[in-house]
Amino acid sequence: MANETQMVTMEKIISLCKRRGFIFPGSEIYGGLANSWDYGPLGAQLRKNIKDSWWNFFVQSRADMFGLDAAILMNPKVWKASGHVDTFEDPLVDCKNCQSRFRADHIDEEWKTVDFRTQACPNCEKKTLTQPRQFNLMFQTAIGPVQDTGNTVYLRPETAQGIFVNFKNVMQTMRPKLPFGIGQIGKAFRNEITPGNFTFRTLEFEQMEIEYFVRPQEWEQQFEMWLSQMHAWGKQIGLDANKVHDNNIAPEELSHYSKRTVDVEFDYPFGRKELWGLAYRTDYDLKQHQEHSGEDLQFVDQATQEKFIPHVIEPSIGVDRTLLALLLSVYTEESAPTAAGESDTRVVLKFPPHIAPYTVAVLPLSKKPELQTVAEPLFHELRKYWNTEYDETQSIGKRYRRQDEIGTPFCVTVDFDSLTDNAVTVRDRDTMKQERIPISQLINYFRDRLSF
Ligand code: ATP
Image 1 (cartoon, rainbow, N blue to C red):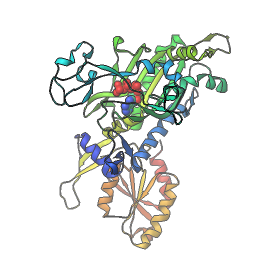
Image 2 (cartoon, rainbow, N blue to C red):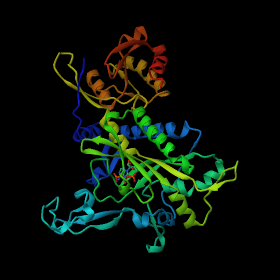
Image 3 (cartoon, rainbow, N blue to C red):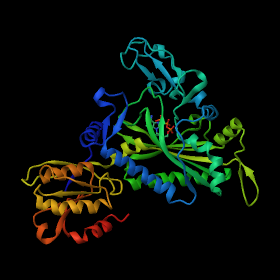
Image 4 (tube, protein in one colour):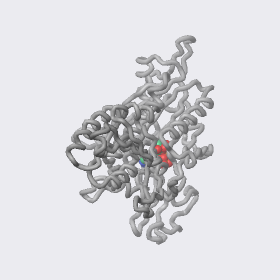
């Protein structure tokens, strides 16, 4: 019986991600760019599987949901109306000695009442900190060749506003009944001064957000529904439910637009921190946009002709934090003795099969051409159904270990017996059990095992 150990650390995850092609440091050949990361072949597929799963679960499988894909650059009036130009700020303190910059709330939770001039700098320990100054998190750029304040635009700091400004368009084209929601997946940008912890806090990240429009009197019930749906999806993609916790934000800590917020938090190796957010935003955003744009953004009930601005529940999920929490959830080390009886440790990423970057790996036992004549057509056949990898390098033991480390649920080994018995060996990632399966039955065998 494999002996599981729980020793996941950030170092192990970061090193596995680099070694196996999940996540590389951004712009690496130029010495990198602080806090930017690039997703490699395995990471890109894993991201896609997470996003597809989110879309299927929250949009495609629900009759009350619509999709959207709004532009990243928007009219700057959007950000004035949403409050981001005036209030999307972090309090920062500078060290006059070592030039380091910190978020005041990260140094001391009571930052509003603290005199930082008497506090030691967390970096150089000199008492040379400034008092906090507010710093806007939105990245600015300019449209056209001349840079002046008239053509400043912002890289969106959240995808949500793209949904609010299209609320009327969606209402008019889709004619939905309340409650209904709009979901979208897209990049967001924040000029975070204290990014870090790998992909936990980056300047550029991706969000999967829903604005769910409800009648004001039903918000509490819908809020609970979304909270349970978020947890259900987390379980479905393989997040460790023991590490996921709800943090009800205290009324005095709520954003100006929110009447209730739950931060869904995760036990990362660097502490319990936000994974996702769920907020009841009242009718704040639509009201603001109605006022600033002059457009009527009321919902009209076709049956009663009642007109009102709907209230909003917002489940907001970061792709990158989800991917990190998932890696931390599925990372497993097991003692697995070698064939020679020596003790060894095997690292396994126990992704649910529909989330794993590759579902199947085809491994011919050697590079002999006669094995290729069986293995290659099999590989091309399996790829029609599942993400499949072909690997004929190294010893079979090393190839199994590699597939365990990238979380491939099934390995198919083609050996010399396959040439006569038309069967292959299927190895299960988690149990390491091997079964001989006739090639003609392989697709059906996987269909049964992968039915989801
Ligand atoms: P934090 O308190 O950690 O800064 P936030 O409360 O500002 O996060 P939201 O504005 O609620 O975050 O954004 C929704 C989701 O987007 C977060 O729950 C998280 O998953 C993701 N997210 C936000 N900022 C970042 C970032 N800088 N890097 C990666 N993901 C992020």
